[in-house]
Image (cartoon, rainbow, N blue to C red; front, side, top):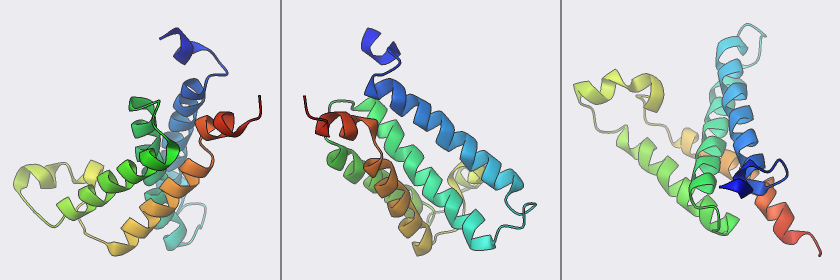
Length: 132
């Protein structure tokens, strides 16, 4: 637990990145159209940030796994959530704000882009590649 709290540890940096990604997603959703950003930037930028968030959540949970394994797991989760949107019930539709309600193959591509970006910039990847 002490290692997570250290300011330079990869887990702390992942946690900080997670909060940054969440804030960026909320800001993009709230102010994206007001800032005259194109629809595709707001819509799929938010989806890419959601994919990055899933990667970072998985990375925090399975800290010792390889970034590639984390990315594959995050992609599986993101695609599963997207496929789950094909099934509609009242209790699922009530949570549409969190999970969304419309199935889109383009969202899956945006998730993959966000996950790939998060994997590429993962602090654990950089510390693993750094020469000792």
